[in-house]
Length: 397
Image (cartoon, rainbow, N blue to C red):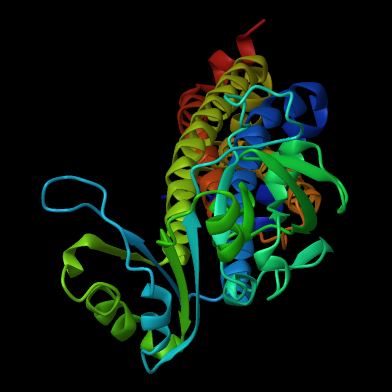
């Protein structure tokens, strides 16, 4: 009995070589097909990378600013009216053991304008607040121009502007005068950004004595800023309401500004998921393009398939050839997309002064998604090529 000769086995290098043949003969079609995969992968990596870079910058910012600051503000009374903090509330907070420093601001019923000729209703969203002289130390802020309030200037008609307040007023230097209440105040300082206290950035700050003397301020603080040891934050948070207002602790609100930054990161993460979904749709469209290219390739190469089959290639070897071609096509798009996504991340992060971060798992996920798309897109064309009869394929005109 004559034994049929066993078909030659293809080594991995042989599979790659025959799989690359179809790509080399149709470079334009290959580039256009791989472009869809590249766009999807680039979008996903860029979204993950930019989100990770933003989160890393936020963590660094929190490390610089610290998470040991609490703010105390007045809540509402039992009857729904706005409560007031006691005049000596900041001094009472300083008596708490772990508290390192505490400062207060008080809302002043006055407006600030560049000149007295601007209508009183045009405030530019700038609040006027009284501030204690230890506010800058507590917030760990800095003065970019001029000086901060001291024991002398806190009693005079002098004002320090937050960064956004100065921008809205068009004030770029100290020594100029602005109209507050019914008199002129001299700008003695301009503050830098305050990430943990954005309300200060939009405020004009005067000393408590000057506010009481010139702006009819009642002396009651509206917000107290407090810093304590990191390990004592929660313990201090628990005692602050009763310390500030022993008679009505329920009228006192205590919050941690760093929690707002963390919540912003979580919100950015939710937005990232949406953009990842859009990138996934682009990847799916690219996979459809690859499948379409492979189907057309099978139809155009029937004679090649028939010749290979007549020379002894098995159905499995034909199937592996076209599946390898699909994987190579997808891998080409995946590699290009990974490079483009990483470059987009680095460029955007550097433009915002963020540390560029491209997580390794994002690259790994991109490679996995590329291989999955290549497999799914090439499976049907490969099976279709393997089913072709050698005689029918060779007879195709």
